[in-house]
Image: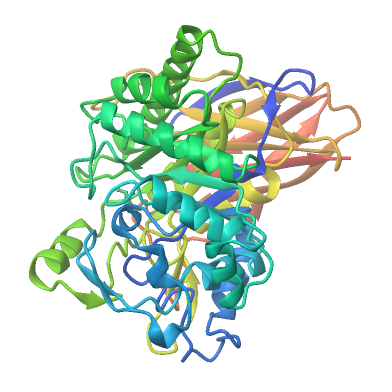
Length: 505
Ligand code: AHR
């Protein structure tokens, strides 16, 4: 085994941007066991007076998630929000077309909003631009945000919610470029509908922020025309464009899998370029920001999910998208977080998709069992805890290698975040070589008087090791693999490892 030599320079004056804490957002969709049997389970011993699991809420608080997207996802494209409000025993059971399930509407937008705030999160609400349109988007906004004395605000008050929810962030539909989406649209159709919906919504509440639907992945055939065309319609009325991306290691090629964050980087760069093209064309003044509101690893559960939708449809809360994540998935999640931090000037919101049971960092066992942490829980928790402040420009020299579908893959990916208030700086680094350790030296001379607070590492001899309800094989630990001498930090980054190196006064 060789030891790669890596050099990095960080300087508190060389900044990318403030990190918007909302990049540590997540997502809960009415899908599988995310809501029912996930966050909500009145029979569970830890359930609070409203039926929500306190043990799950505690884990969400550990992740410190500032914003949660809701209620979908594909689910939103046939969602009738009115079904989800009012007395629970009067709410209808509906066929849920996106996932071929039954939606019982026991939890709806009021209960969810109250729960989210209690868990320490704001809500990013999505409106249905699939099977519905402008009028319904206006109605749900009036219901949620208008103080009173109108049809829908009074309806909310009659449902026991006197104060408006004041939801600030709204997604104009979901993945409308995808042929799988109910009410899928061409870019012209979506652009016009989103433009008019946005205009109407901002009349009702000019303080809201709106997200225009971007492409569902880098590989969509309509990418990046979709962004170029739709943003020409929505540019004046929206603040963000959405990005979605999932990766999988279906071929069992770990090196190539860990290089996928390079694709994410390319995707972000192209979306920024397209937003700037539209800005130039419009002679605009504002930059459209990115809401990377679905990102994760997703592939382990595909076959089981197809079996449910094809052979066992119309169940209530079936166990769908229950990916069990392994160690290499956690590394890629760490790499994706580093990639977004490197674009902190444009990526202002992001949602790890999703939060509980459905492609999630937190799992729950049915029948009163425990909640437990998947491998991907940890890099997200570290970034959310220590990645707040100012992202610094990473100047890095590292060996590179090629993989099956990627060229010039850096052995080490790293970024640092400076928290001026706390006088701390944290270096996040992944050694994505699965063969070689790395010795990384970091010039930190601008951080005079700082010392190493800790070096946390997530590593495993087995890239495929996974956690379970009673067995946590992959968990972070403290190491003494970092030292500081004469303004240089020297760290040993073991092959295939996620590292959090924290310095403070
Ligand atoms: O997060 C799971 C699904 O992935 C969402 O419903 C959809 O938006 C995306 O395709």
